[in-house]
Image (cartoon, rainbow, N blue to C red; front, side, top):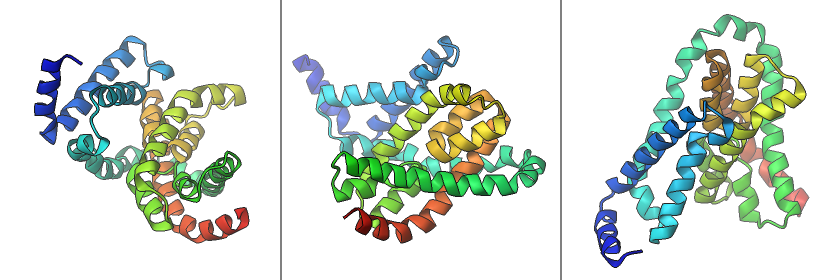
Length: 243
């Protein structure tokens, strides 16, 4: 980096609002690129924005904690944003009542599969116990996942990264999985991606249709609640079984 630019960056990085400003600029630019690409999954705004921010922090040698001191304002808004998703869900209430039974079964199966499969794959790849515990809540929205990770002995910061990666992979790849499995129902598509890919997947579902987004929001909220209740009870037994 140019010495002069380096001095300017050091000065600016002292402000906690720099992280927030960079996040908003990166995401706005990513949204425009996604629009030019006509909403293609590979041009996912979160994926593009995260890539830009990671490169910028790496190139400038800025510690993550310094960046997060400002970006935590966005993190805080995840809670209210999640609650606000109940508004489009209310419009789907009649169909939701008809599908209550199948959705409950899908929620339990999806929640358990997401956690257990991640831990098993991590174990096969030789991950440490702390990493396995951090992997377990990867399909839950970030604020809840970090709380679960802390409670079961994982690393909340690592869980946050894994949650984001899980969401990006789901948002990018879900479309192709649906095509392969010939799943056309937007409610089913939305619920599946909400369970597997939390908020990022839900945002992608809303780009497809309001119905898909509403069911994704429902799945995201219920999966967070169910995982928060079940995982602390199941993980000790699972970790003992894995040795």
